[in-house]
Structures are given as structure tokens and as C-alpha cells.
Image 1: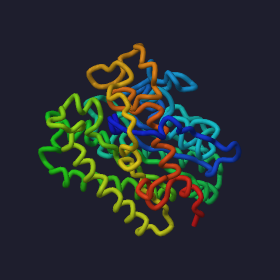
Image 2: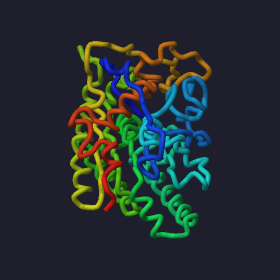
Image 3: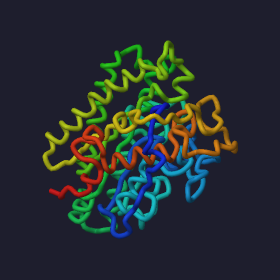
Image 4: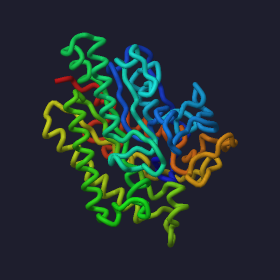
Length: 357
């Protein structure tokens, strides 16, 4: 599962649209790693509770129910279109050889940076597994192109999105009865371990040819509707502040880690996408602080129920996952930053334009 802030104040949200210039994509391919925020069907055939291949998920998606944990398009879908890709990046589970050269989506609901995160929900593809799957895809591309030098140059020009880490809290650190991490580590120690593991995974991705990598920070997990329902919000706060404090520690460590990767690998272009900044409250319009669909005990939509009619005015589709309109805000501002805090050192539009070394 993954999360975004539960109460957002956007005037711009009602006016945000994605405009795609028809023509050649800005980059030759797009590879996506992450959790349910970007999963587009990889969990459909896994033995897991974390799957969204049923209505009312996909009610506004052009292709209907697909396994996306929202009513319409995901962040990755929108960024792909902003980059100029005509088609959606296919899920690894069903990708064909004729599709792989333009990108693959490896995202998996309930997956984490740590292999064990989300295990109580069933099967999932951890970040390490996703990177192993990418290695196999690279072999397939190399065999198809029959030219390793050509493949290496191709991969260096691609954009790589990595959006993961929420489940290392929601489905690990915050469940002490099932996972020992919160008994073993303080919030700061746990964040340090997570970021160190994440950096190792990103280094592996670099060693496999990735050069243009957008690394998304975490949203305010303590504002997720299901987290609020689980922990409560004492006092006047609308969110679980102690959990958000832990998330902020993680984000505070992740950005310097991204900077270090750029220093360690001068030909790389890693960039940090500041989700907390992008989704910070703005304006004076308050959106409903309830899920758009009727949710079951784990926070996901109850199958075949009717969602709210005004999905463009809701932030959350279920207890954890944002609606398409919330995804639109995050995608457009990560692609074209409107604040210096949104992305560092590049937004994704500029990342796509950086010359290959």
C-alpha cells in the first residue's frame, strides 16, 4: 500500500490537465519501480490481498480494470504521457518482446525497500526482485538488438522512476505485533537502515546502466485515512504526527543520499522528488476527508461497490491510495516543478533533457 496527505487545499487541482505534445517521446524508454502507487497489474496473478483487479478500481481508466490502485491513471501513467509516450508502459508480468525497448513497469502493491515488508499480505515483488526482473529485461533487449554497445547507450538515455518506501512503514515498522523492526530500532535508526538499503539498490540500478533516475520521497503516511483509523489522532491534529515525524526523518536522509549518488557517479543524474512539498496544503479549498469508495477492513475498496460520484473532488480513492486527480497534481509538479523545493536538482522535464555523458 502507499499513501498521500489526507487533507489538501488546492485551488489549482480543479484546473490541472495533462497536455501531451504528439510526436517522438523525449526519451527512448521509461522504466518504473515501486509499490501500489505505480503498480499497473503486476500483482494481478499473485497470491496476495494487495491487488486491485476488480471494480470499482479502474472505473475512469480508459482500459477499465487493470490492477491500478486508483480510479484512473497512476503517477507513472501520467509522467509517461508527459514524456510523450503514446501508450501506457506495460507491466512486467505481461510485457512482450516488442514492447520492452520502450519501457517496463515493475511496480508491485505492498512491496518495500526491505524484502520482508508486506509479507503478511501475501506475495509481492520487493525492490530487489524488481531490479532482478529488470536485469532479465536488459538481457532480452540485448538479445533483440544483438549489440551490447547499442543497448548500453539506449539504457543510459532512458528515464527511471522509483517510488517506494511507504510499505516499509505501513506494512512493517508500524505493525509491531508482526514485525520486529520497531522493537529493534528507533525511528532515526530505521530510516538510516532503509536509506542505506535504498542507496544500495539504486547503485545496482546504476551499475545496470541507469543514468537518469527520479527518486520519489514519501508522502505524509500519518495522514492516510486507514492509518488515522488504525492509530487515531489525539488532540487537535488531523494526522498521526508521530508517524509523519518518522516519514520526515526518512525523507531528510533520502535527499542527501541522492546527492551522494550524483557525487559518487559523476555521469549519473539522480534527482529527488519532494512529495511532501508538492502536496503541501495550498489555498482555502478543503476536499472531503473520506475515501471515495467503500472500504473493507484492510483499507481497499469493497469489490463491485459504487464509488463517490465526484471523484474529481476527492483526494483518496480508498483508505491508502490517491484518486486520479491527486495523482495528476503529483505527476505534473514532479514533471514541471513550480517550487525549488519540488525537485532537486532537476524536475523530470529537465532530467529528460540532460545530455547523455
